[in-house]
Length: 279
Image (cartoon, rainbow, N blue to C red):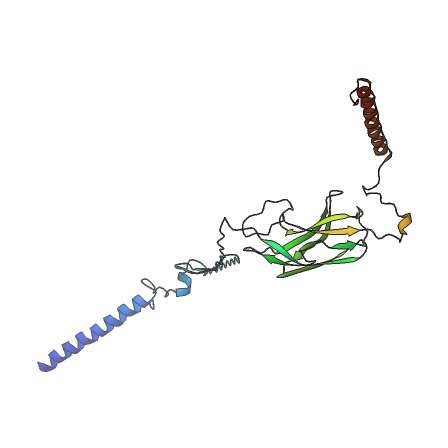
């Protein structure tokens, strides 16, 4: 009996083993039936397209060198793939301001600036011969605002001409210039009195002066003359002297004395006829 039961159990175990093998073979397709196993998907085939990478870089630099300096750097990088997008933006902005301000307070009632002559001395009028070099030296006085450049001119009132001695000359504490009067000029120099002017080159000669600024209304006089050959005194004739009488003046004096003589004689005769002088 026991042997029979063991035989039945062995048979059932054998049938179960054969059934499991049969099912595995059918599922695996070894017997040609059922559905075949699907091939494992390749991760590379699951993408919808090739990887796309985009890189964009932008750099902007601005330098301003006046009163304000500004430096701006902007970098932008963009990477794009099929399933992800990343954007990195970096901005670096630095601003540096430099301001230089010079302020001068000037009293509106203060005097205008000017020059003080060193050569020639301002205490007397100097005379120079036309054709030689003339040297002028001066100092600046009462200046609150010093001009960068000055013009030096000589003005002659006799012919209403202005002669430029130097233009756009750099301003120094002591000004100096040499005038070559022998140089050819459009308008010749005359024997006359001249006035030296030193004024701001950024202004005109007739500008109204302001407090603390260089004035061009005050000048210094000097004389110029033309050299002439020696003439003996007995042959010299002064064309501009007023000591000699002209013909018209002499005739006028003769008429005056003649009328006076006639008046005296007539009065004496008239008075004698009436006995005015009788004793």
